[in-house]
Length: 111
Length: 108
Image (cartoon, rainbow over all chains, first blue to last red; front, side, top):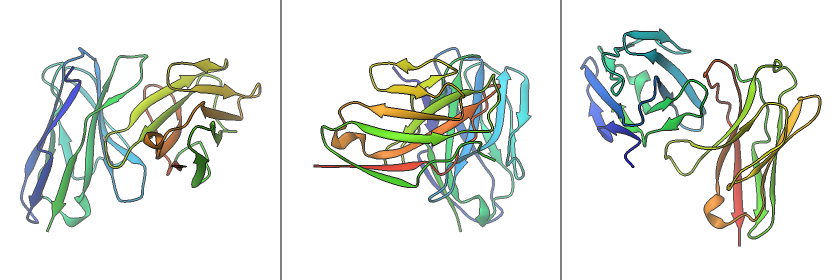
């Protein structure tokens, strides 16, 4: 039971570098989400998607981009990494009326 | 902003019931109340959800007041492994808005 898989688990970036956080799910869920979690805080929604080819902004989308070319994959792109983007990133998926299932997170540090 | 308020922390003795309160006086009639928990820094884990009626599953029970202004998550026999941050969330349109949650410490 793979569920939601995120890669990499850890990454250190330099300011100004770019990278893509990968997320894939094997539950055939239409809905997928990206959150970030800063220390001691709850999760904040960055972007979400209700199906292939459809994405929309969440609460904190600035500095990020997403795409959804398949049902299974929902990558998150950081174009110009900034220290404020140091965080733990969680991907989740759900059916339209079901609970969200989360991955184990990607811990990203930008120095 | 989160539409729910929770106490920042609670303690519970191992083997006893843990009752976690949540206030959500401003939620609308079609917003579900969801509970998730986060152990250490893992991804949040779904526990239970409800709209109007009380709900029970293998993990917990959810008691929602008749006026829907508050609810209580009940872990009937808390174990040390239930130590976690518990989030009460009002959900609409598949969007979750997380608050800071309640840190539950189960002590032996």
